[in-house]
View 1: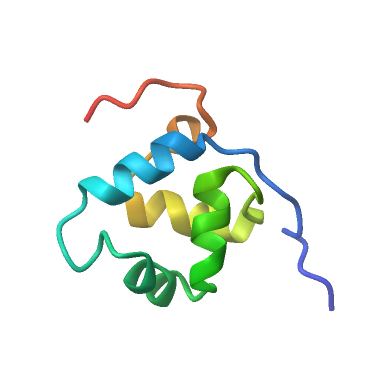
View 2 (view 1 turned 120 degrees about the vertical axis):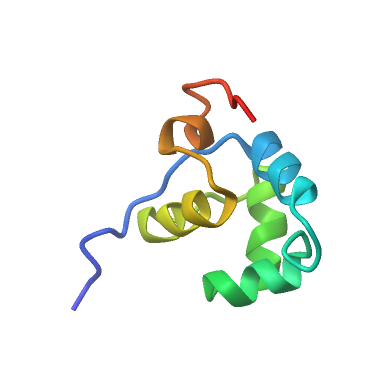
Length: 81
């Protein structure tokens, strides 16, 4: 069965990188982030570089992990933190 959330989200890749780097160790490490989000570590680099975009399912996980609203991660709203 195909995931009904198999769509791609264009995100603010700079904010993604900045927020990850601001997190306390070990949560700022790509390997730890990938483990928690259950994705490949190389995907995080690709997301931060703007080379790939997350699925809707992964997008939701990114928002929760980084404690960002969906609008912030989409670049629609300024990050107030």
